[in-house]
Amino acid sequence: MQAARGAALTGPPGAGSPPGPPGRRRLGLLLAVAAAVYVADVVSKIIVVAALPPRHLVHVVDGLLTLQLVRNSGAAFSLGTSMTVVFTLIAVGVIIFILRTSRQLRSLPWAVTLGLLLGGATGNLTDRLLRSPGLFRGDVVDWIQLPHWPVFNVADSAIVCGGLLTVFLAARGIRLDGTHDGHAGHGRPGAGPHGRGHPGDRPPRPAAAEPPAQPGQADRPGPAEERGSAAGDSRA
Image 1 (cartoon, rainbow, N blue to C red):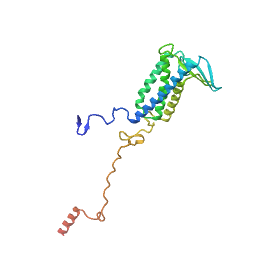
Image 2: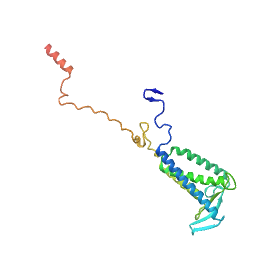
Image 3: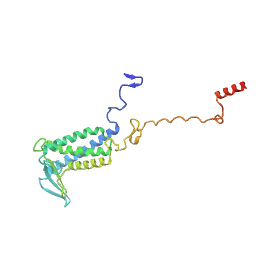
Image 4: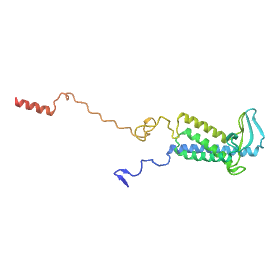
């Protein structure tokens, strides 16, 4: 049904529709980064738990990198060890927020950033849910130790990198949809950054130029002037 001839009752094309191909590609990248971080974190923890006795030190690079199995009931880098359930709920909230926010995603850097955060949060949340001492209270497995730095894991590294990228992108004014602060489109609806339309939009049709005057046309009297001249001759 139509409200008027040629005007459908439905909204403009694309209104309420799922993300287009660029949005799907960015979402796919986010999930791929998250999956890579998650797999690396889970597999590394399984190997470490099976191969390293608790508190046993393995010096990979003397004075630089040491492997040590530590059970952490707190947040990243063994912070807040008495708030295990709170950090578990925070991780669940972060994951839900990222998945909801990803529907607006059009930016490549933001896809990588959110993928790092999602993979890291999911990796540590898996330990909270599946490891002892119980559901939502499980200890996270940490195993990487650097000089003058708390023991951490792959998920912690991804969360820190994602946090730093978040600060950097926010400072640069890069939004989730790929636009920049202060460069939003102006003018007609649908205008892209810098006031330009979307690719494929037709440019406005230029106004038709008036034809140039013919030589001698400006000096030629009009019909009214000719009739006035003829009347004056007859009275004379």
